[in-house]
Length: 63
Image (cartoon, rainbow, N blue to C red; front, side, top):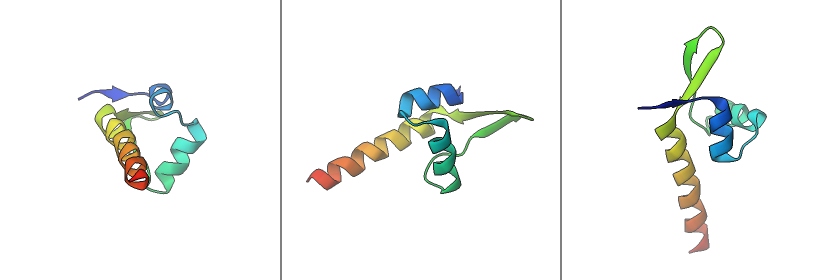
């Protein structure tokens, strides 16, 4: 299991910081794991699964 920081989440998803946190507040994106007082990271697999679900949604619409 690997944890990734916000910069990597933004790079992998193409989302801006504000959009990542907006989606989290709307329960539309994986929640981060607290690593300390002001330090969080995301489970890489959860982010990858989110990306895969977006691809599946796209493909379902195209059928």
